[in-house]
Image (cartoon, rainbow, N blue to C red; front, side):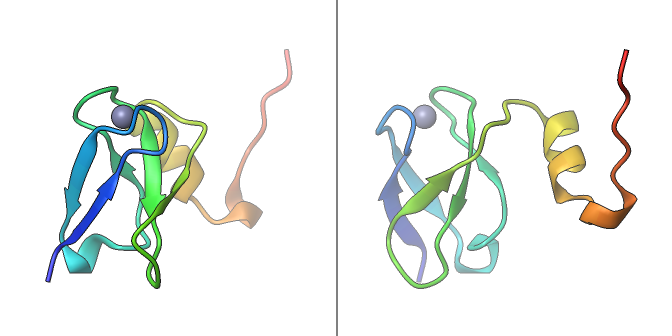
Length: 69
Ligand SMILES: [Zn+2]
């Protein structure tokens, strides 16, 4: 059964398929990212707003590279 919840950024209603719970999603209204909880009908906001930033976020911590300039 899909998860019905509100975007944690703009409160736009979201429908999340069960298999996508716990994975980063993007709000169709504001385009910002959130992660639907696997156990509750709510989501954690993520401080990213694009696919490329999500790939950065999803990468395992030990392989992250930080470029300082
Ligand atoms: Zn939103």
